[in-house]
Length: 440
Image 1 (cartoon, rainbow, N blue to C red):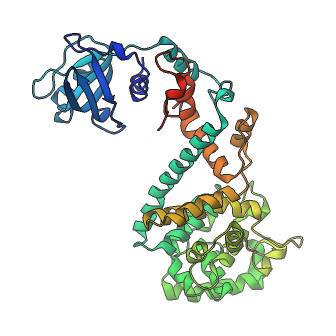
Image 2: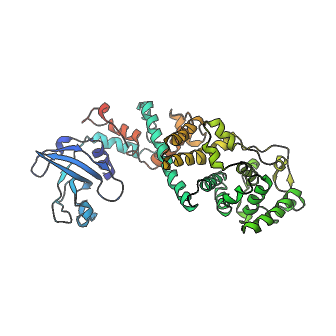
Image 3: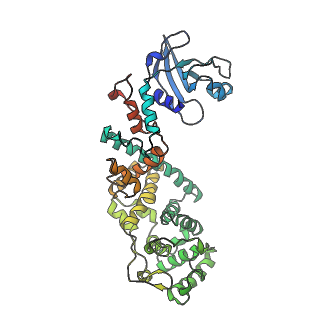
């Protein structure tokens, strides 16, 4: 039996309360199970129990066998001296804390149907283990859980964004610039775009934001895409030669060092996604008055926000995909799908984190509302959910479903998932199902 299953039983009180007895067979009444701790230290903090007329407050440690208390070294660790109750499935040894005091150990009993349901889920060969049973769960319950999953995703994004914020000297415009440019790579060129953002700070681009040609020269040159060996037919291209000439002046002025042009990937990409086209679109986005992040923060609805990030490459790219080689005339707009991906992965998380860190609730809530107004992503993961009757209505829910599948289903974290926990709880008999509040 896995220890995490016993954590689940204790957390949600899915055990026989009559089974909790002290050494003298006195009943142990659980007033509060405590706060679940997934870091080092006891499993549950600040629990409260009562034995007879005496109330105890402290921590709870849980093991499959009581001997594991010693095996894990807790008997020498002062952090476990405040354990008031040691809950086990198999009480095979008396245990003592680092002070030499015996730790009260009790054996937990539960309906075996619970463990059977747990094993049925975690051993299911299907990627989404509950795909057959999820139809038994109320849709509103699922929606509520998906909302929590999305917030978890944004919390993870917060760590990444705050790391960049620290690296950029607490500059939100520079932070947003790095985050946005990274996602301009759309997976294949994520690394090179990220390197470009670090090599060419936004403060330099901002000085030339009223001159699109100069911004393109800065971006193409620092990206290493003006290396004369990359595009054989470009050596007689006037636009290409002008960019080289302009970049030589600007790179000297700002002591810029170009990346190696060979790091950019063109193979197996649709021409519209070539990094040459994307960089020109990025230049269009970065030009204009005020900072780009400031403009995003001023948007009150999704139409305004999309207007900031839906742009078109410069005129040269109407009949080019790479330097020096003409193609059929076709204006290079970012496109609704590409701009939606930028909004989902970079823009809304940045706005959300900004609101959270500045304690501006209306700003973080606006970010969530933007996600609800963006169409859902269509990919293999959302297709998997659709097949079992769970369909995303917006990017808010498609993002949550992607995270749920990758962070819970794929890793078989059914006990941490409210849907899995609810399904497992349906096998117990000690408490009525409607009385059970499964919170994370």
